[in-house]
Amino acid sequence: MKILGIETSCDETGIAVVENGQRLLGHVVLSQIDIHQAFGGIVPEVAARSHLEAIIPICQQALDEAHLTWAEIDGIGVTYGAGLAGSLLVGVLTAQVLAVTKNKPLYACNHVEGHVYANFLTDSEKYSVCEALPKFPLLALIISGKHSQLVLFENHFKYQLLGQTIDDAVGEAFDKVARLLGLPYPGGPSIAQLALRGDVQAFDFPDAKLQNQYDFSFSGLKTAVLRQAQLLAGGDYSLSSLEVAKHLDLSTRANLAASFQRAAVTTLVDKTIKAYQEFKPHSVVIAGGVACNQELRRILKHQLPINIIYAPAHLCTDNGAMIACLACYQVMENLKPINPFEITIDPSLSM
Image 1 (cartoon, rainbow, N blue to C red):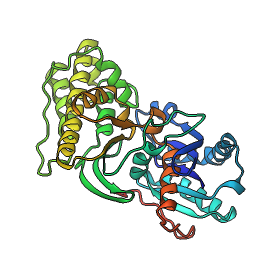
Image 2 (spheres, rainbow, N blue to C red):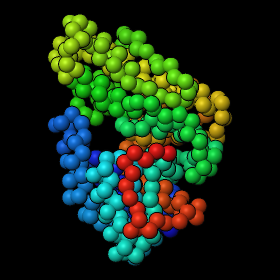
Image 3 (tube, rainbow, N blue to C red):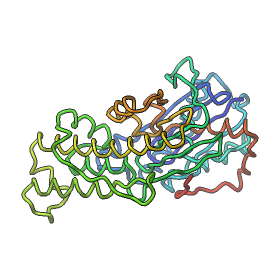
Image 4 (cartoon, rainbow, N blue to C red):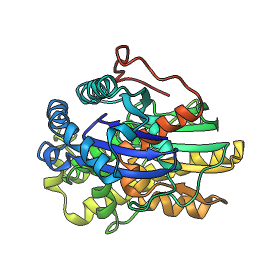
């Protein structure tokens, strides 16, 4: 069984072909980071237009890399939510047309679930993939620019949402703090690089106290960094966040980056360990773009008593492989495909 996956939820056009839910055959991602860096973040209209220009050629490129024709593809998986409406629409409309014209079953995929299923890719001759297949029950920490969720999977498509962010996602907080400190988009890698030059104990930023012990909140942390930076820049709280960095030297900005990263990572680690101790899963999976953070990986490795499963970096960020893999498991779990004429986008889709 070979499934072609289409992912266009945000600013990466990702197309991939996966066989039997584990073997990655073809994998192409066109990133728009260079385009959006000039704006300090993603411009939805620009993202949608870029998807529109790229998606059909990239579909063919993924098939060529897999050495397959459309006749050898058994189905199509596509992200229908969550994400930017215009970006989702490009992917879903493309999948609709391909499903009808190529006479292929169509599977609607949840973007957030897809990040987890990137960790089920364990076999490929061309691409780096995961070293071990996760076992159920598994605990998944899903962390990206738009999502921060802690989920306990009993089996495929049978899960319990333990907690999620009540405001900003952790990746969004990284992006906003990076912009505050005058660092380029995306914020995660920029903060991590600058933090290497700073003192993690320089500032003691707060940890939100929430009613649900597994929920996340990063808005207060982001605001605390802003107020500290404004104080260091002269104490004027009316100073625009876009102007603060000009008043801070490199050492101060590095200390702010290091202390912020420590606070954010500590929140993620503490809640993951607490959930592991309560539910005792067989596997722990860290998924999404923020899973690339090396400080997070270092601390979790030190504090969790089992090996943690991470996808390689190119499968942590948005990609078509995770969607193709998710669709494969929909087929294997006997979930019905969706009528191509009935699929609609859901930008606010949750797990």
